[in-house]
Amino acid sequence: MKNNTINIAIAIFLFIAVITTTLMSNDRTGVLGPTDSVVLAGSDGDVTIKNNDGRLSWGDKKTSTVWSIGFMETGKALSQLLKAEHFIEDRDDLEEELLGTISETRSALEAVAEEAKNLEPDNPKRIEIRQQWERLYDEFQRLQKIGANARSVLMAKQMQESYEEIVEAVNVVSERMNIDIVLRFIPPDGEFDQGNPDSTIMQIRLRTALRLPEGIDITNEVLAELGLDDE
Image 1 (cartoon, one colour):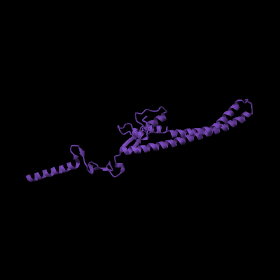
Image 2: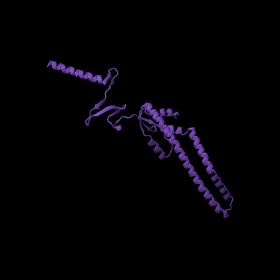
Image 3: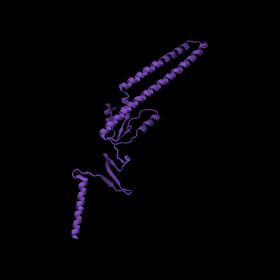
Image 4: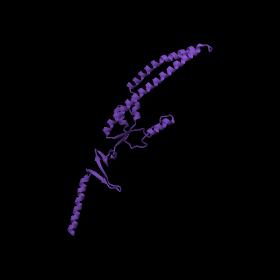
C-alpha cells in the first residue's frame, strides 16, 4: 500500500514537471509556450485557440481570426494632396480654357444689353434685340453648365488619384506596423466645420469611432509616408 502511494506521487510529480516544461520556456520570464494550441472548455463546447499565420485563430475561416486594426484620418491627407502643384496647374489651365470659351458669349450679351438700353421703349427693334439676348443667354447658360461639369470631372479625377496615393501609403505603413485593417475616420473630438444640418450630420456619420485606444491612429505615420505635414 505504501509503495503504491509512493508510485502515484512520483507519477503526479513527473506529469506536472512535463506540463511545466512544455508551457514554461523560462520560469524567470513568465513566458508561456511554445504550444500548438490552447483548448478552452465551455458549456456549449470547447474552443481551440491556435496560431494561424501569425494571428490568433479559433477556427479555419478568416472570420474566426483576430485582426489588428488601425484608423486613418483621410481628410488630412486628401486636402493637402489636392494642393499639389500639378493639380493646381491643371485646374488653372481648365479655368483659362473655359474662360476663353465663355468670354465671347458674355461680351455679346453685354453688347446686346447696351444696345437695348439705348433704344426707345416704343422702338420695334426692341423685340428683335430681346430675342437675340435670350438666345445668347441660353448659350451662356449652356456653356456655364459645360464648364461646371468639366470642373467636376477634373476634381473627381484628382480626388481619385489622391485617394489611390493614400491607399498605397496606408499599405506601406500597415506592412511596417503589422496592421491588417485600416478604417477611415474623423477623430471624435475633432472640430466641426460650420454648415447646415446636412453637412453636420455627415460629419457625425464620418466619426466612425466614438472612442479608440491610444496608438491605433496611424494618421501621422501615413502623412509622413506621403511627405505631408500634420496640419
